[in-house]
Length: 195
Image (cartoon, rainbow, N blue to C red):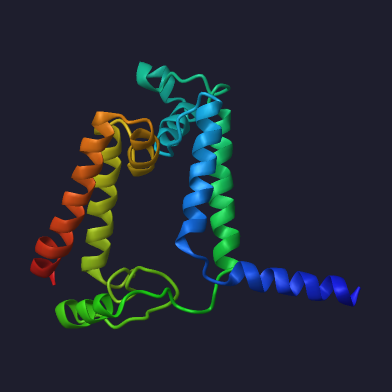
């Protein structure tokens, strides 16, 4: 019994440690290989279409007339992602803040007046909270643009950057270049104007 408790404690300590980024890379590549072998395309944004279908939107518009039985694997994937994220945050999260470079810490402090670390994640709590109107407005506009872009571009970042690029699709390459240009413009041009 003592040996089992010791093993369990050691295993949990191992999981709670920050892992090298390559672990995620290998895991994503393995999942992508498996899904490609099964004839499926990895992506999450399509699940929103499925949710609309489940709510009855298919009766009003043919775009939402989806065979949910054929999409059951995607719904299971999304459900597993949400459940895994919840378990990771609330039961297996590291108490240490995310390690970011000193230059990024200096950039946040000098250009935006933000101290780091804040909490346990990447998002600066000084900006993204329910008492900061700028943070709320940015979250709403950002969420709308991400949702609109995913629909307009027929895929989200995971669909284009992971599946599309691995399948050597030119539209996904153009889309990913657009993601990076948009991120650079937001970080270096728009954010300094807002703050």
